[in-house]
Length: 195
Image (cartoon, rainbow, N blue to C red; front, side):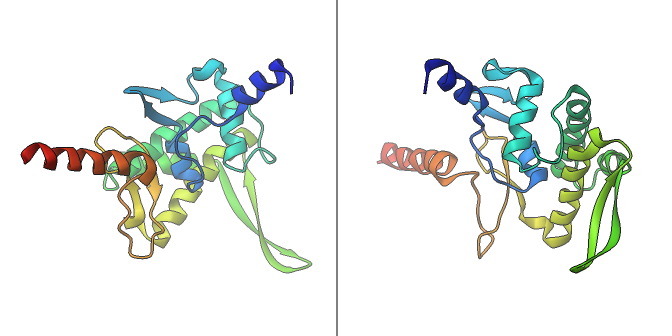
């Protein structure tokens, strides 16, 4: 691998500290805190353009083969991210629900009959709304399964969200190796200082 290839690979790697969450939460996690500063994958950080950040997210979320990374898609995705952030922060916020519904207006699921039997096909009034609609639809599915398992990391300095799939539903941290360990170390330090 040449130096240029290595730079390109580093530039296209997903730099976020938490990936692999359901699409709705993964979209929220395109904003995070790194070394005390807020970072946004879509804000041109890490030497990336905004659309390159979108391409990285589409790839990481498993949507790259279905949707294009372009300026219009980014605008719609940022609309969905803001709507979802408000809805997750305050599920009782009627205006947030209205914003999520506005994103959902741009697509629908059509029932189909395939050789394998009943199926579904997603349709969009404009394909650039596809990723935004997909994230909003995923949020509805999370709400339908168990809304109490949609969580924000318990660390006061972390802004990441996760879907708690632990058996007993008591996960508190976005990552035990990051925020969880910091909290344990902080508690240990406080106990040793008291002695």
